[in-house]
Image (cartoon, rainbow, N blue to C red):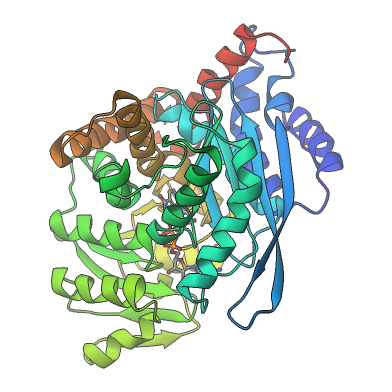
Length: 446
Ligand code: NDP
């Protein structure tokens, strides 16, 4: 088996040199899915995984725009249309200086499996730019978004490819992107998700990824006759996913001790309550300031500059910042301090050796493609409401989100239950694979 996996990875690697994040994501899938494929006659010999790792289409384009000093700036825009076997391409846009082909291909590849797990008809894609919205004025962000959409609009559409937000792309950016799309196409359509509620957005979409990851962790705990009440939780990040994961943890009776950004983390041993969270939301979403400001307002808390929060003692860790933010040493520290559950809010935040350590020690570990699928699931519900030209209430959308997270958990159990331990990596990868592979087989070699 090892030889078959190695051969496969070496073939993929040949075509994808210098793409470490993409190879990391493919390796994890290959190691769990190939042993399954070889036991199933319908998949074996069809080169189905080899087809899945090749994007259906990759678009790369120039984004020129003028800054507030009237200087011309040039960024690179991308859209990876990975797989459309079960529905139109769907996945976020990321604006961050680290964005490159490897990162977007890994995100698009993971998105294919994630979207399949939601049970909604969505294929997988991802896009973005190396543009950094940090430190830019609103008008600079608007000009960039308009220039970006002036090329992207010809590749997307409500039945073709429907982008959404990700790191650096929140409500403000979605608004500017949507406005430009609408102007260019002269049509009001649900071509982006994460829209404002008064212009086609869904209630609960901003909350969905963060709430969803906590619902998923709750499912894991319930499966072990446990719950979130009084649990100590360490969260990284302080953006969209981290904020709403914090809110839901508080609602469910857990105590959140940390949040972070790229400059360091805050540790509040009294717990971050609703009032403190509201302050953080204003700090990050409106003032667009640094998390270190927290200790000026709450001096009993600590700020640890340029550090990650994984050394803080906790029961549950929820990484919600970015890929590869939790390495082997951090994983060892979490284990040493008694952490029993890790649920990924971010995409691929745990390095491969950290994941292997969790699996070896039978830690309850939920990979992002299962645990953070709530965001894209509610994006799917936003698309459904756009088609119906109708809006569901908060309660209805939240109920559907809970149900979807519970169904994803059941799918993971179906394929990942190994006697006394649920391997959620294996469960999520095989469940996602089966759905997409069956559709690809039915549609022939295309
Ligand atoms: P935001 O831009 O709202 O927040 C990102 C947070 O992560 C910020 O606190 C940011 O700090 C921190 N961060 C980003 N890059 C780094 C880095 N290189 N090192 C340290 N900290 C960093 O993004 P989201 O909350 O939307 O996304 C967070 C993660 O969740 C990403 O992995 C994303 O792909 C994933 N995700 C998001 C979904 C969504 O619906 N938004 C859906 C599913 C997954 P700073 O401000 O200093 O940059």
